[in-house]
Each structure stands twice: as C-alpha cells, then as structure tokens.
Length: 136
Image (cartoon, rainbow, N blue to C red):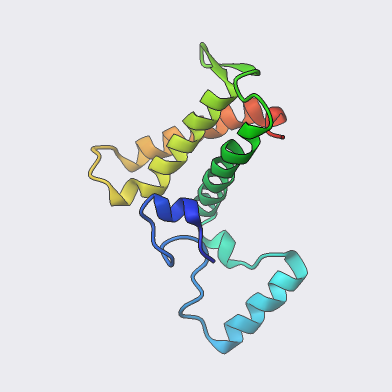
C-alpha cells in the first residue's frame, strides 16, 4: 500500500512496508488467512523495527497535521533528559529520529548504525513520556 509520508522521505513503494511483489500463490493464501485472523500478516514482523518506525513516523506526521488543528500541541510540556519539551517539540524530535532511522542507508551522513539505533531508542523513550497526551 502507498504511504504518502514515507514517499516524501524518498522511499519508493516496495522499499517500505510489506513487499507483495514476489510471493507465491501459496504464500498469498497463507498471508490472506493471517490477515483475516490477526488483522495483519507475518511480513510485518520480519523487520519489526523498521515496520514500527514507518508506522510511528507516518502516524505522527498525520497527528500533527490533523490534531494540531484541533488541540494546542504547545500546551503540554514534558521533562526529558534535563530539557523541557512542548508536545509538538517532542513529536518533532521523534519524527526526526524516525526519519533518520528510515533513511539511514539513503544518506551520506557519517553516522554509524549503532548511533542511529541509539537515536531511535532515545526517541522511543521520549514517546513513552508524551504517550498519554497523544490524542485529539
């Protein structure tokens, strides 16, 4: 399925999400059965780290676009690692770390895989702090 936000990052269909292009008829049937039973199939768990980063980035992009028109994302503040963040600042931080994680292999940044993982871990810790405020 197409994802507007991931494609805006420079990822092309087939480079994100579950790849449906090269599966057998038998696999298609198995995946269809799993989707009926679970609401998703096992392909989403093959690279669960990436699947979660894609999901989180896309949902936070829409959350700020839509929810930001309804609620004041500057109202709530959160203390995290000796800094105060507004909800919007925290979301922007998380989105940036997701973006870097998802585009790591597409960039020429002098950053290691361990550094990218550490950034994503920090973003997920901040997400835990702001989690109760993520509604509109």
